[in-house]
Amino acid sequence: MVRAVVGDELQFQFTEDRLFKPNVSAAQIGLVIGKLSPALDRAFVFDLITTPPNDAAQPPCSLLETPAKDDKRRGSKGKSQSQIDSSSLDIDCDWVAEHARQVSRMLLGGMSVVGIYIWASESAFKNSSLKIWQTVNQVAEAAPVFDIDVEERLIIHISYSPRRWTCRNCLLGSRFNSTSVRPCDFKMGKVLASLQTFKCMYNFELRLPIFSETASQGNTLKDVLHNGISQHAMELKGARAIIDGHLELEEQTRSSNGVHEVELLLPFVKDMTTEACSGKEIVGAVVFSGSICSFSYLSPKESFSQAIEDIKGDIIMSLRSRLDIICDEADADMGSTVEGDTAASRETFSDKSLPQAVLHLLRKPCGLIFPRRVLIPWLADSFICDYLQPSETFEVLKDHFRELMSIETPADTSKILELEAESCFKITKSFWVATTSSLLSSKPVDQSRPRSDSKADSKQPVKPTTSYASTAIVVLLLALLIGLYFGVLRSQ
Image (cartoon, rainbow, N blue to C red; front, side):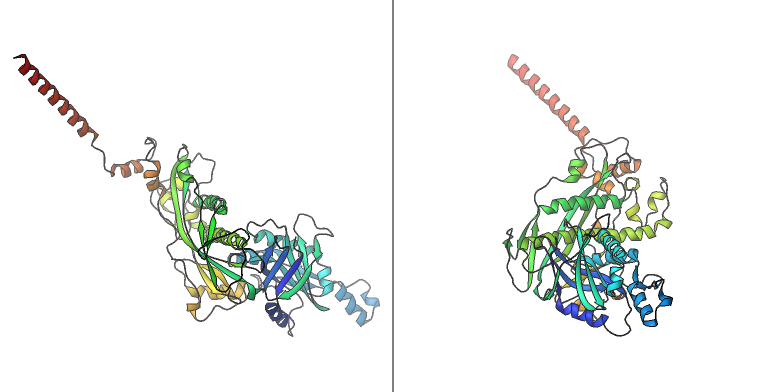
């Protein structure tokens, strides 16, 4: 359980200066970016990000005033005080959760959406306890913290009447009660300046099986990649790490400047696809390979093992984020997708709609390039990221970062790091080619396969088994004749 929260004093001062300016709205909501550390019973807050207006240009949080019934019998001063005391917050929970979902894709290892902040009066905050708790739960569901079993998030309240900062620990759950929100210790410190940076270039190659039409597993490319990434996450848990050329120790901690170089060593595991090919429901395979540039940030007093866990989580979350991006585009492109099992419909899937394609229906090689990660300077010496499609340039980043993170991208594009190759995420083999390759070379040919496969197979060189048999017969006949010749000579 989080017992103490430490916020970056410089960023909090910037936030306070912004909020206490004239003409600022009476209510505001945003996200808390930081890190939960169960091992230390602490949370570290890096920054507060304002949630932008929704698609209808309405603010996600506004003040509702409910006049009391006896206002007519009060004076003007009493009426004003009554309205203030009965005010509450109207929060667009869905929009705040969507903001959290998109921002979480832009955070690197060791950084997460750990809660929300509220800018409101003390009375409005107290009168909206249930609504605020519901918002925190939706944010936690939309932006989960990878592989950390912590059922709590933070609520930071910035009050202007009276003027003060408070922090509360919000317990997630299905029911709200008096113990769902608890106060916790809150102080300022130099959080960002004390972060240590870890960098890892991770290369991978996943061979994922394609199941037949009768298999119970999902058969779309989206299903296959999603299952493959989840399987790889389990394998990645057992990986050891080399940090700056030295094998990582369990509780190793040391403070040093610069970026720590990390190399992950995966344990030897069985090839999932080769093992699955022994079954009758496998009709092919997808080869999913690439290279990921991963970063993680370690808070003070945390061990190096935590930085490695953050690197692993960043790799998996990055893969899932890229898959979500291409699937979102596929959903938008579904209107142009032709349904059916005809030969024509098998060729109608565009690059955008390919994630929704049923794989065992396709009959030609295909490939899909995943979005590449680019790194943008953020606070102190830290970075955040975004993803670009092959045809996109840095220009598309400007509006995205301005809207979601309330920052401007650097005018000098040389400060934006692009360490991943554009073509690094591809399905490099079609499942039909993979099926007829060495993966299934030990299996007998299935006579029920489509004719298109038979044609493909006919192009492969055929072993001259007939000529071998003829040669053997000739040699046998020669041996018999020689034997008869020497038999006749002896008899003479």
